[in-house]
Length: 355
Image (tube, rainbow, N blue to C red):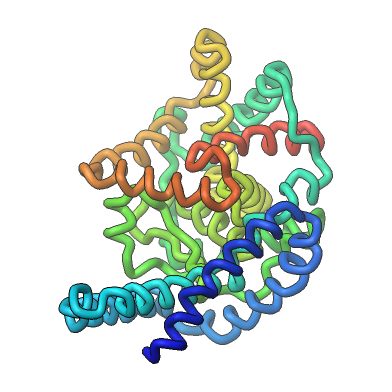
């Protein structure tokens, strides 16, 4: 790369970083002009141009980019010592371009208004309200389990494959848009990740490719988790970058789906989060409420935990901590622990809906 061009692109990181920091203090501006203005156009263009491809274009892009980087580093190893300054300029120029593209194509959504403001629901709750909602979730989950399983001790077996889930996941969003029009999902771009095995080893159920806007569920996870995982990644596609908000929207899309298996996946997903919060506040109450849940629901929970346990390795905590640091750097102060804050959204939504 020409020296002047490398210098310009490398230095571009500084104003880009400063602009992003300034923008982060104006969530209303981001909400209006980016999340509901520029981003939907970018998203639609990505989906129309890449959504029809039957495989993950983004994963292929990452593979080619990774191979190119390896080849470049091998070819330019000697420059580290002989032309150090320009070597670093070339590296930082590439990183600067990726950093800018990452934010322009998707990541400015990290700085939009909190979801509860867009949905016009409260963000605070007390233990009494949490218990009330958890009891409702237990009732809903038990009823669906009894309907779908042969008896209350057996896990629910899903009678379809993951391709069916991908093809049907939008029905939940079609139902959801009648209440929340801004959650409409128009053009599909959901594909199993080609990196499903590495994702499993890293402990991730899926991800959104911010450069191609493809939702990438992990094709190896148990199908019981697949509806909420796909719906979660679609929520990211809709511009909800925060993990707790994507969990909440993914749950809503699942429980609003006409298929009872999708509903079961959604209700038990929310139930698990709420039970964990009750345990933190009152372990004795947790035990009392846990005894009212059909054993077969725990069998589905165990199916998921056994899957992750079977793939645990020494590198997983490193990847989790790296991702947590990434979230903290992108306006999620609790890092990966921000997942637990979804409970506040559940409680206020279900109380408002009086389900």
